[in-house]
Image (tube, rainbow, N blue to C red; front, top):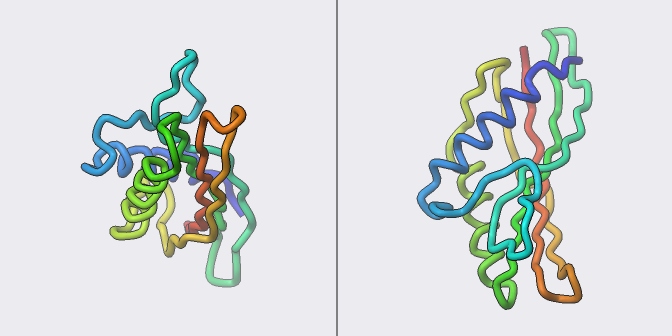
Length: 132
């Protein structure tokens, strides 16, 4: 088991989302921006890594969350952005600087209201299998 590809995976996710036309003008961050008006942004969030080594070599399963947060009225803006995130991560393979991405898949999404309904958040959970 190795955690060595965690930073490479995050960098690949950031690069892919930053270059996705449907997300043009949307901030891609790994910390919630400071300020009173959030707008809409994509947050690369928590990750859980599990050993997936076998007799053929070392490997790891990365379960990671990407969130869409928006203060736009209703869920439509957040849902459109979440769909763009999902399509961007699943359409073409990510290229990692460390390790080899074997597979990536969507696991689930949770949509909810925050701040007494003023903010929408959609958490997307993905699973990536990486070998070394």
